[in-house]
Length: 113
Length: 113
Image 1 (cartoon, rainbow over the protein chains, first blue to last red):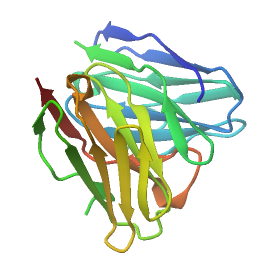
Image 2: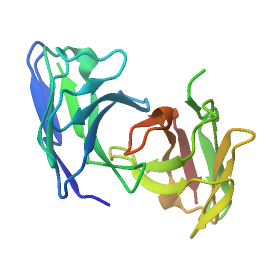
Image 3: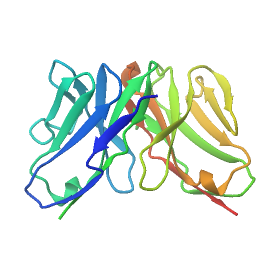
């Protein structure tokens, strides 16, 4: 498995502001993924962060709201822009190893007030 | 129909009993399935992966896959209070690899002493 470090682990933010979440992996990986887990819900994929190209977003998620960077094979950031209380969720970074298995960072618990 | 469904509501079993968790999927092309355990406030942890029809055992955990019925299950033998968590079934999206997953809604398991 990979060691995935995600920060911040939690934050409380004012509506209208932006928060950038960082994800660092201890080995080089081709693709990294960002998920959202709303309160009491399961995980929903936001986007795939590809090194050297733009991120690929899932239906319902747009780049203006969730810009993603992937400057190298071990690091990615997700920004939650112009936040509203509906953005209060846990945001999770993951990587896929050994074929299709995915491993997760510890998550960022975001509360927007 | 959701691609991956976990229809059973919260499950409560006594310590030492067998807990049975179920999952169905809609994509007949899916080749692999995963069970994640998520403790409250924590990120998902991979506990089982299964790629072929039949049973796969790992300690107290047994995953069962029936591709004809599009059905995946997880059995936990000798359930312990420490097994109390949300269990998430997942499958790769569109047959892709490297960890791009669709998750079921999750089943909350409580093991009471």
